[in-house]
Amino acid sequence: MRIVEFAGLGPCPFAGMLLADMGADVIVVERAAGGGAGLERIATDRNKRSVVLDLKQAEGLAAAWRLVESADALIEGFRPGVMERLGLGPEEALRRRPRLVYGRVTGWGQDGPLAQAAGHDLNYVALTGALSLSRRDEAAPVIPPTLIGDMAGGAMFLAFGVVCALLEAQRSGRGQVVDAAMVDGVAALAALVRHMRGSPWWPEEPRHNVLLGSAPFYEVYECGDGQFVTLGAIEPPFYAELLRRLGLHDEDPAHQHEHARWPALKARIAAVLKTQPRAHWCALLEGSDACFAPVLDLDEAAAHPHHAARGTYVRVGGEVQPAPAPRLSRTPARAPGAAPRRGEHTEALLRELGYGVEDVARLRAAGACG
Image (tube, rainbow, N blue to C red; front, side):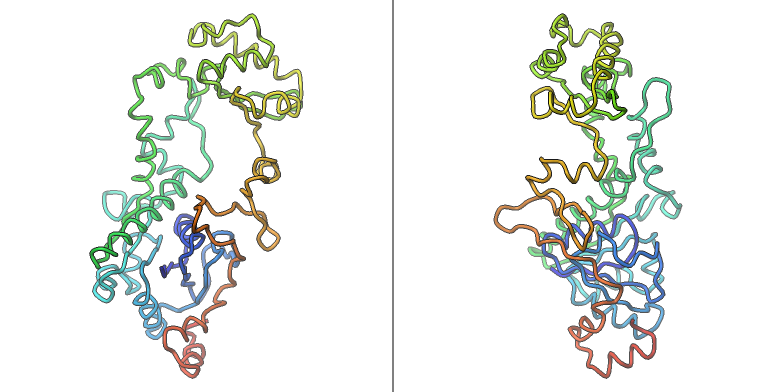
């Protein structure tokens, strides 16, 4: 599959990386004058090819159209209307290439009252109600890393939608537009929590909500060296195992869900964990059914024995990056390669599209490509 990605930031390049990791020929169309954050080589460009075209010049736009007409899918992450103003909108694209899948990712979607408004990850997570789920007691909701809206709600749903449309196009011979809005994706991610509301797993009273850190057995705790660990022993056998390993033999596991006991037991567990450094608790609890994991920074995570055994992280050009996921048994993802330099493949790609040596030289001299 050939995927043409119009260079941008955040979700669209990440979706392109997912597709490239799995073997798609992803070609990034870079702006002639650069732009964005000015990042020449970033992790999300791995396994892609790069072409620089000036879309404001007729010959640069013509080359872009020739590239699109050779593609199975196009992905872009601009505000609604930008691609149309560039002369590369979906209506014309599907007229020229009827089986093209045209993937679009935005924060608010292609239509609706907020479609043209600026926004960022935090705003999209807030509008779906998902941010409210991170609130403890009377404190403000906790700001999540910029992963929930951009990458989970945006990039992952864009990639999923593009693959769905590509599969359908193989049967029908017809392409379509994929409208991946981050607010739609985050709303979908919260489906299970919406279903659980009012149940014992997600009570209306936050103080009784296990998954919001109210319970002593599902919480982040500080250790004696200032490092942190997590406990997640929700199921009764796992909770009993946790109490045993922490030496709390006088605590009856049968009282696990008696809310009145939670504050005192949480304070007691916190005091126990503060008596030793994180390494002690890792040695005692990691790998057991106590549902334990240390809170690692990014460098520590890359070096952890479990990740090392699975090859969860790889080194690409001297940089540690996550390995492609998920893992396929018969057709594994390609090994990550270094991101291309801007325009590294311009001449080769133009030649693939039928431009001769003199044509490429003329386009370069005119500034239509770089």
